[in-house]
Amino acid sequence: MAMKPLVLIILLTMVVPSSFHLKSVSATLGRDFQRTNTDASILKLLEALKSRDENTWEEAADALTKLGSASVPPLEHFLQKERQELYQFRAVLVLTEVAPDHPAIIPTLLKIAKGRRIFDSEKISMMRRSAGMSLAGTPAGIQSLVPMLKDKDAFVRRSAAFAFDDPTEVLGALPQKRQAAINDALPALVAAIDDKDEVVSRVCCEVVNQIIRSKIEPLTSNALRLVRKRGKPINEC
Image (cartoon, rainbow, N blue to C red):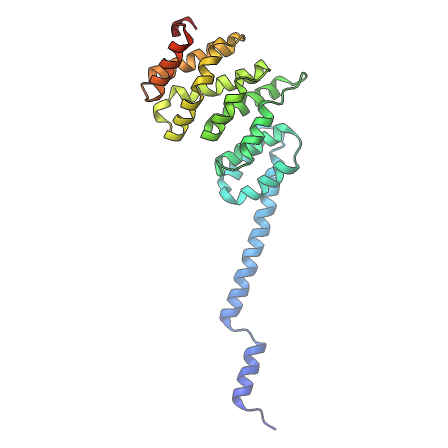
């Protein structure tokens, strides 16, 4: 018995995909292939962050930064699994560029900045100092520097003091939220002028002076008020 034309058309449609369907499948496969290749490339870049060659890891960091948000999940995974602080620091520097408000940034930087060990090499000590200074890049990071100014380890206190130096040099150019965070840190900065460590004392004195010279309100007025309350002229620090 001959098959009715309408039934034949329906069956053929079920067996042979339309050109639209074929294009859709091709596009999906293409995206999956591209995603697989991208994931593999990111894994190679993350591995390159561990390179001893400075140019190699810096190029990898730059490439991850250019990938933008696509690099965030792999960086998160890397930070969770990696145990070497040097490599964590390199990864978190990239994360700071592509997702500056990411919740993993401040805890990682704090852990590195405050994790000094007696046998740290000069390279690792500089990394810890850089981690502390990197905290000054966001309002939340600035807030985390205040307890560091009171840490029992002079190295940690110095790192916090140095972290305030650069942003207070260009106070007028900072976003208001960072200015506000520095304003909130003023009591701790003025108190640190009397730190028993000379480096902490002198750096915090200069930071407070920079705030006063900036003429940025209410920071300048608040700094002057706290200095007067301290009972010693600012030029004595």
